[in-house]
Length: 84
Image (cartoon, rainbow, N blue to C red; front, top):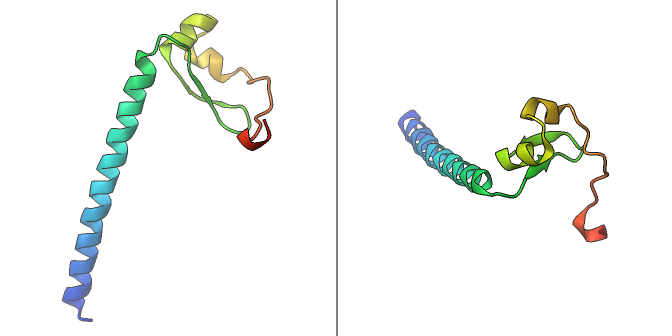
């Protein structure tokens, strides 16, 4: 394979990655808009119980701002759905 072929392959691969990243970012934005539009409080925690994200309804229902919520522990153990 010649250098020009390798360069073309890398260029095509870079373009494909850029398209996929754009699609991922759009899906993430769409999910964020849906979660923010809910009147129910939504909290996203990692397996250790750390708050990753929440919507405005959660802050209003719990009477805490996002900074205060990030300092709180979830207070429960995460259980794999298979064992719940």
